[in-house]
Length: 350
Image (cartoon, rainbow, N blue to C red; front, side, top):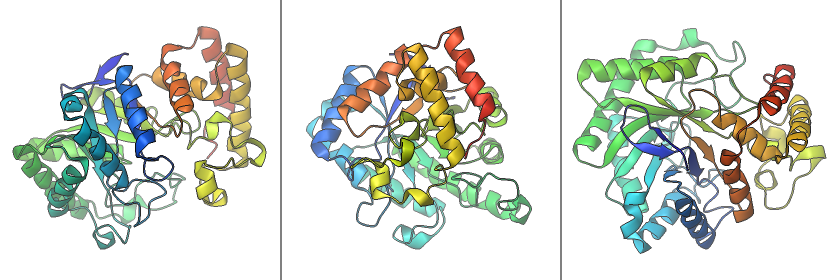
């Protein structure tokens, strides 16, 4: 297993981060246990969860993924030191989470305590904001003028961000969290937090996780460049575009037990005709060069300059092992050339 530095934190994280959002909905405790133990056995030390999980998010499944991880930790306390655990506080908009209200310093302190109880641990290695209080260009909102940046009151949001940082600072002082990160944010968000932490001697941002993969490369190059030069770890989530790049949804298929079988595919922003054309083209490249479609996508993501650790997820051990193997399958020059030929044809299919 290869490792990278998590931004300015000093932590060394595996190039693979095991995402856990299916645990508690598509995976039960025993299956999660098996995934954790296999991940640790191959050197994965980085695990990502959130208070909001499992997904799709509901009031009934809120907190269940953290609870599942906590159950394993309670039975294996001696292995806590092998794990770097990242979790997240949900942003505004979910009625069953703080009445849908925004993230505040007070909410940070309360939510950290609640996550610690569910995780059955004394500290969280990386605590992240799942999405910002303001609207950000993620989840299909990145088309020009989908919303107006000019309508955002920057001073108001900067004040909220300072309040959040102060809550983070209280938790760091108390030893409840070690480091602070973002998710689904922007270059302005990164740099504003960095500025505020420097001005007020508060914890420094060490990472951001955003959607990134062959079908969705909008963070390259500008946000990724910013991360590299500011020592902010870049953590791609959904590199397989919600499983689409595996090819399992080709030709309208919706296999039983998949995420689309418990969601409405028509409502998913990734589910476009152009995306399916791109997926078919990538599948041909994968076949030519001896990869599964998932492995091709993950191997490509791992070699992108600036990527620190790629977040993968799986609902079966077979999927997990297939995906992990991709990180020991670097792309040849020919494979990369064929891959990029497809990318140039379909640079932003959703």
